[in-house]
Amino acid sequence: MSYLDEFRTVDLILGSDAPTRAVDGFSLCLIKAEKQLRKLVTHLVYQYPCFGRSDVPALRQALFRNKNVYFRGFLKGFDAIYCRPLRDFVGTDYDRLLRRIGDVTKDRNKIFHGQLTGKSLTRAELLEYVDALLSKLAEDPARRC
Image (cartoon, rainbow, N blue to C red; front, side, top):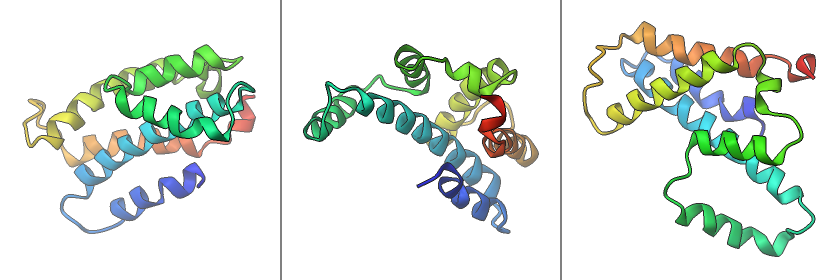
């Protein structure tokens, strides 16, 4: 599944008239961004000649057992095993997006647990994050290579 297909659900939610579309789209967008980064890293791992198809269950189990694998860990993993850092692909927005992802992950975690973020986030603010991430994903990555 391509990342455009992956985020189609977010587009459907945002295009709805559901009163919770901002919170739902915001939460799902971050989940899908995390998933896409995990898929990138695991795809790179599977390219190493020391791993074969028979290693897939053990590698998945290792990710399952490790409760401390999060977005930043996958970023470090990508940079550790790929010849170019992810920063090169994202471009000048990398630092801003990374800070933003850190902030919104905290907000998302609060929202998931039914807690207040303490920021009184508006629908527009939640949608601003989604727009920033989706617009970055929609760019042609070949232009940055």
